[in-house]
Image (cartoon, rainbow over all chains, first blue to last red; front, side):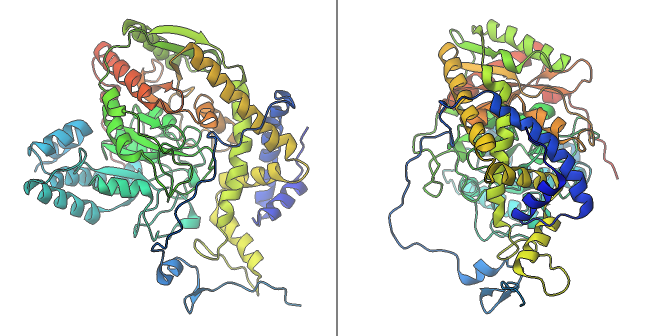
Length: 98
Length: 506
């Protein structure tokens, strides 16, 4: 049912924000096509009346008391930033140049 | 202290170490130094540790020694050193998850399990190697080179927790922390002749543990004996308000259970779908013999069928990549982690895409792309939605099986350790290593691997897996301990004692 083309992989990689070089795309596309084909067998077994399971535990909302607690200071928060300026995260431009 | 004497200390079980520390026969500083010496000698060959922290470990050891000398009441494992998989955040100590993306990441806080280890006053020797973001079954997907199996340096130590399993098997630590999303504690234990437990989903806090697939991930102990694993299990487990999936209930008495010697009346189910065909002859032979020993211990062996286990792998390789693609979206090159800036005046989006290309290895990219695809519009129902239904069927298979049996058993891994490089070019072949371990993660039930012996064809260790219903983790330890003692008697020692001396490679 699959057949994931090289173009499909390039598109999905873009959605996942991974810039793949041509050689990588060649290598991964073939492998992914094979894997998608194989995982597709899940379609064979479960009928419409089987409920989906997202989690092993029946979860309800878990909340904590709304109390002020210590948290990371600014210095700690930006300590691992690739680039920081004036206690803030410095990021590349987010708008187009035009 | 001479090298020999120091090596002797590392050969003790964690229980023996704790006892000797308690009665003053040894100090924690001696014990910790003995491990550090061995790490210096053997880690360049094994690559089990990505980071070693001699100063931190020795400081903790000396504090414990001082406290003991002052007559303080100390926790059972106080002074017994431990290794931590590099997936758990350690304040001030680099935490990489085996990825270039986090090569320089120094967490500003401790994971809850690390806090618990510190509260137990256990010296942390260092951080162990792993497949990148815990994706793999061999540690070959680590960005920092593979770990080697102490039994045969040209073979894999399992994965993703191959650093922890190799460290324990090579006496570079008596105990280690692992994480298990599809078998990453149990399969490495099996191929290194050690013990590993994946507790019930939610039994151990994951706060501060780098997430792979949040509905599957669980933290657990790696050790050389069942009783040792139980002691670390007790340290790690328990409710944590910082993890919303943490179970708010008492921890099962795993330590008490690890003293079990008789299994009279226990019903042990053999899962037809995860044994026999496709399993290496020597692995299956040791498994069959272990069943005889279980009978000799008074257990009743029944065959059970879990008809949907055959679809577990496919469901897992949709659910895991889907959750991973979402969890790993956080590596955006803005707040922490690697930033790769292309030439010119790139946008944030271009920087992000270039950074994720440079920071992630092939396996991580494969799974992120697969997960993104499975969750994308038009494919969601056929893939992710369908996989979730299969998950329900697998959970129902377990429910039915546990009506007929108190625990289930299978070989842990279909083969003994394979050669480094054997499966790196064939992702599908790599995935099939976890065929017996994955169902437990999908259903959230606890599982343990103990050594069953060595395979005749290659003299490498094989593992036996025990599975129990959710919240019944103590059953794993009861069965594991009784069988371990019985096998030790019939095989003339622990399996790990058959491991050859490690040859130092330049």
